[in-house]
Length: 571
Image (cartoon, rainbow, N blue to C red; front, side, top):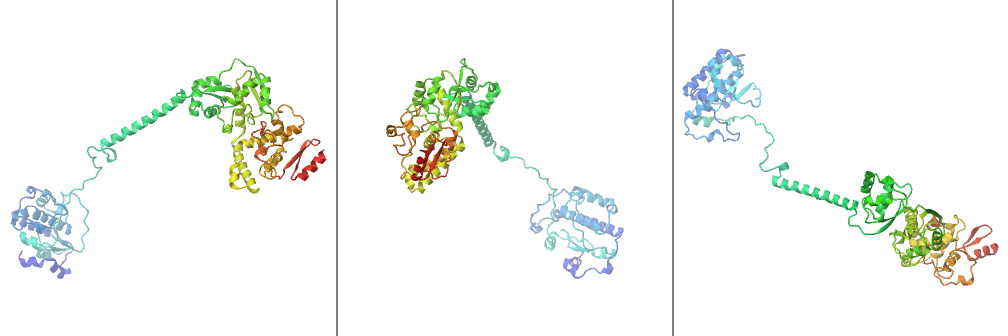
């Protein structure tokens, strides 16, 4: 094809001078396709190209390969035709067959063999994305030919005049090629999980570090378990515990959990759940006998259970009922009379003997025989004859601790605030109030006086109100003027006789007829109702009371004049 015909096939001219519609045939015939095949053979013979099957497959260039114009101009023509031009010609043939609607069976066998044998033949390429269907007029640009327009369904004459392949030189191809070099795609590589780097383990952590972490975890767990086992064994076997006697009372109906709680509170064990497990495992929990025991802190779990399961040879048990309001002298005498313990032993142990650490005795001065006054709770007890004085006293103290509940202690704290408010309402300064706060020992002292003064349980709340009103208004009522304290001051512990003027003038600090404020301590051991009266006094503004023998109750007054009238009426 001459240069003029080549020029006529440029895209610009094709666009400006499209093929007339009347020249387009409805369907091309096989003769036209055969004519195109012969043109291809002539093209191959003209350039003396080797057979397709002998042409080595060229490596597909990378998608970002430089454009074709970078090929040196001095490259020989045979280099260009050996692969690219011949392969592109085959592709052009494929496009022609597609364009004219020819099937693979319509192509001559010798031409089909050449197409199938070509390394980069469309039939041998890896399937790529499906190309869009051509429009009415589709531009075909080959790397080895001048672009041309392939009309859809052109006539045979038009195909013979216009659709011919024209060889061009390497330089002309470089200059006139308008499209980039087509890249050959490789088959997509299936991506999988990347192989781990050598020397790396879980989460990309180097094996050395991960091994160190695992070792540290194992060592930490081992040390923790070892420590747990050691502390449990130390408590189970009583390692490192002091040689100390502690009294514990097991009541009727106490469960294994109750026993463990008491032993923990006494400081005999540290882990109640471990003790419960051991007691249930050995079957000794059911053998515990309710009683009061003197247990050594050095006893292990087995020894503790054994001691609490031991029934002493002396089964001579005495029962003693301690009346409410009994003082220490009266209680000690009753215990001696019943053969439980001597008065001397009880007085000595009360003054100087070792006792369990009770919270209500904290700060209480010891050294006197009746220093535990107010805390030997009156109740009915069972004792063995010739019992140990420590055992006996702690049985009383344990009863007080059990009866004075946590709620009652919280109510005591509320009474402290109420007492301070009463002082403030009577004109006392904040600093004075802070230094004269109601103490727990003073609360028990008030309860003990109420216990001795009240005729009935109901009137105890008004009697307590009289004492609190006087204590918080000491500028007008410096003394309590309680006859019950006078009896205690003169030592009338067992019987009461009419008080004399000498008795009333006794200088003892317990004599509230002579001394201001509360006595140094309780004058008896109050029962529950008197404790309640001291915790919840009435709101009455009474300052006086007098006993009416005829009615068997006390008469209360707000003023001295009213009190004197009651005194005249009662006689």
